[in-house]
Length: 104
Image 1 (cartoon, one colour):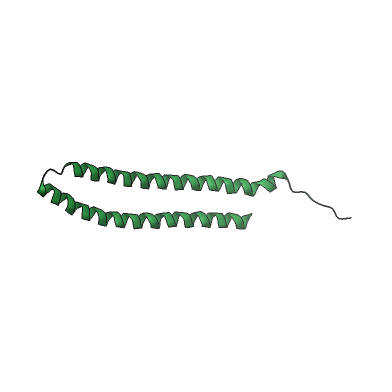
Image 2 (cartoon, one colour):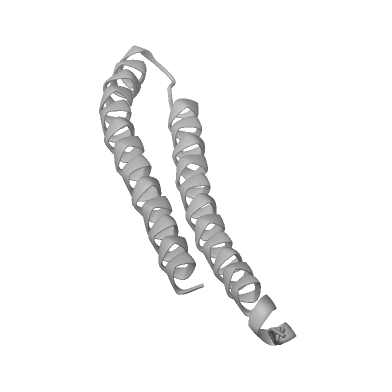
């Protein structure tokens, strides 16, 4: 007769617990990243609104328009950098889960 062995409950749930802990840690990192990005874009928007309130004549309107061109250029660069940072963060999450899956 074949003897069956039943794994302990700890051995069965350990990979799930590890995956859940990793998921929560990654969610914290992602949330912190998203809040940071949101804050920076909100600050930029408020700063541009404040700058717009300083427009009082043709010269200040011209200056505001010129500065807006520079802001848009910088914003484009920032969006690209933020997208790369997010992609790198997500790739790191995938690598961590892949490593965990190999161990389990």
